[in-house]
Image (cartoon, rainbow, N blue to C red):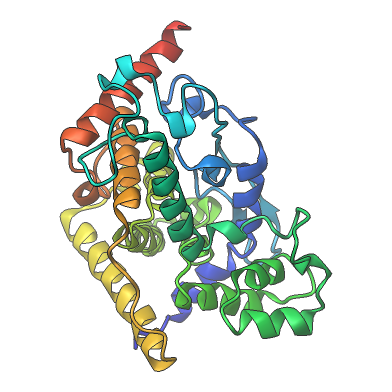
Length: 352
């Protein structure tokens, strides 16, 4: 089983608490416009209900010495309306009559499915996302039937040891829990299948990157970034389009901030892919040791379709495909999503 080096662990410690920032962006209901990432019209209408409000950049930073958290996040909000969400965008955008297909047929947009198939697909997607930890995000800060916020530390730790994501997220927000324990909790969530705690491992803080670059140590800065991007690729391997999309956007922002100092070579890309697969192997080894079985690397059809949609939205931003390009390949569905998001962007630019 692959072990984490000290270099990795200190970068992990820099971002403990990121889940709270993720949730804050998730709750902001579109308060932060998406235009800075090129969506033009503001909010990308993702199709997974209120779970799909995400922080679109790994921009939370925690100084290693002072543990001072500074947050700057972009929220991509989705509010179901007549022409988005489960009913999808208008038919004249995708060129497809609404509500005529079953899930067994070929489809790109949920808008193409019958009402029953939309419900079935959404239920399947929700169940899969729960397995990645999304359902547990935010239970620390909202009333819920399980009242985890009222549990004492002993009870929460007992539940967390059994892979209870609600307990893990609750502990990650408790101020009396040490940073070292939070690192362990984040890893525990990964072992039980979550991808939503990847930020605990991945986010290389911008101040540290900047410090290393200014100190004439661009290779050290790039190494931090490579470790982050490897976890983003790990998410892509798992089929998590939300985390992968966030990682791609974050890297684009790093390119704008730091330029060629963080531009990846072909060898860097190979290193990232190798590390991503090592992460899968490491987690699987620990799961096997606990009798949990290996991670599923075959997401359901609904998740694959959402990944295609995410690829279309990413490509519509005109991003530099220096990172993640093996997951950003076009097919007929991606092309249709690309056309939709391109039109959406142009509509926002023209005020239409």
